[in-house]
Length: 211
Image (tube, rainbow, N blue to C red; front, top):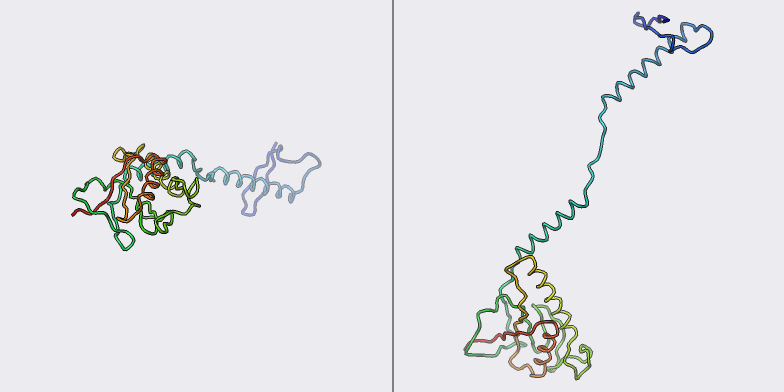
């Protein structure tokens, strides 16, 4: 059973009996309200069907890790050691020799000046009157182990070993370039060499000026 309800434009809306509430007969106004509600529901359904679901792309942690790994390997493979650059000044006068080596380029320089012990151009510990302060030594004034120098060289050794894992052209040679002032005391030189040996550097080249 169905009933007809006239719309404002004169068209007729068919209402099935199942759309009508049970009870006494409805007036024309009530039937018109029911028809309007039905049309509104139909419009909402049509709008929901045409609406696309919005979603935000999720960033994968795995993808980020892969990206960082690629960047790290790229930087390590393209790593290159800077050529040796020694600045000779009032506190550093090199020893003169008739023989020189041409293999200095890839060695880490350790300079012993009148004022500092310098590792790769970075001052590590102060030198005064040809001595290192007792506070900088593990066993005090009579000791040979210079703690700040050991820490610095150990970092250098660990860094070179990691580079060697990714770059075949970089090798840990356990060798240092000693750049010593010509007036450096033998005792101080011995302390530097001993400390370097404790940090896994047991081979040395000495920078000199060729006569």
